[in-house]
Image 1: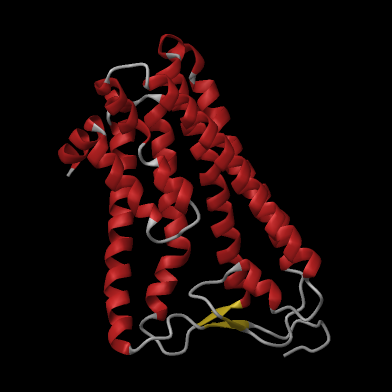
Image 2: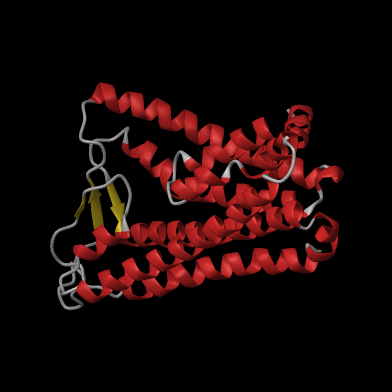
Length: 279
């Protein structure tokens, strides 16, 4: 260990689940099944949207992007989590930990932003149906997709560029199942109060803005469909019923990515039909 550079920690120990081997085996099987279903479901949606000519519409383009982000977000943490359930010594290298936090916040920030774009798409489709094709052009769709990735990248870079330069020379035990940015920052051998406030403010501001925009858009949609028949309400709800789950759990990395393919398969007739054909 090189004591001169002030960064002597080369790996972190993850506490994981402090339970017996029997319960860990249950977690192992459960997480493995969930992760397998997550990857399979989201890949199936991406393939269906890509190769089905009837699904080349803005809504399904955004859904394909969301499925990709869901799969990536789950892949960042779940495989490592599953592997740790098989071992007693749960470690992750310092740079592996930094990479995990980087991609988790990048994909999480991009997904939160993409959900706002999907909410706008549903707003136009339901509240301004006659102008839908004019407003939701391919140019606008690219304008939605690229900024979501850009915002996610800026969101994570603003935090990680400060975190990677922190000196880690003392405690290296993370009381979690994966590298959690606030917990990692607390392990630094310096005063990190300002950085902790910045991380909370950065993540909190992004989450609050996205949540507020989602809340406003779907409130307007619900007020609009109230004036229509119950059948119209049911059809409208089928296009955005998934959002409630996403709003409440957008940054979860195991369960949430699984909800997207399940809910869209159950609630959307076109997706369900083409999914059965592909399967």
